[in-house]
Image (cartoon, rainbow, N blue to C red; front, side, top):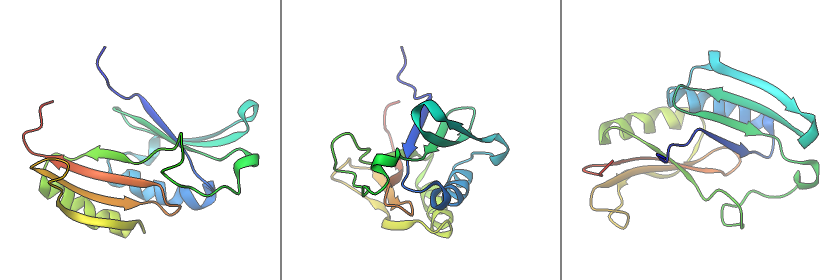
Length: 144
């Protein structure tokens, strides 16, 4: 097996707040909103917004009502710490940074080298409107 991710589903606090952000953010990453679908999974008590791409399905879902008032924190057990998307160059990271800023994302760290992660590790870190952390990264010479 090759470790390729088929889909990612992230629970957000409020779909009405999250959806407009993810429309912009995922468009920046190359998702076409023509491949966006909404639905409800009543048996599991959630609404879902799915963004399709030939390489990845990304979805956001509403929380279960019992968890609706919980705060998002990436250090809680079982939580997503952050999700990193791979860029093709440092220039692409820089260009995406400008577009990500326009989405209203909270920029945590602007694009720069992070030698603690690798000699040529160049990345941008940001959070969505509810505090879920993402990264855009390029690492020159990384073996694929």
